[in-house]
Length: 47
Image (cartoon, rainbow, N blue to C red):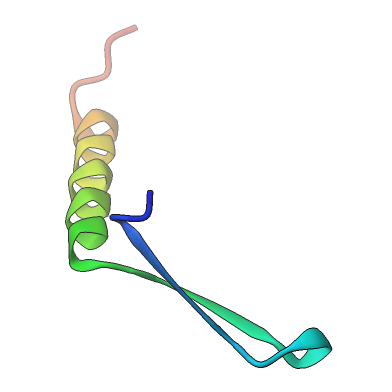
């Protein structure tokens, strides 16, 4: 997962902040996954 998400921590104690962001590789993987899910939902519905 560390290849997909970057983590940045700042501050200490109760005033600390943690920021998460997608890396370029993570954004590519997310987009591919989203598009695959969309194709399943938009495809022909078999009952």
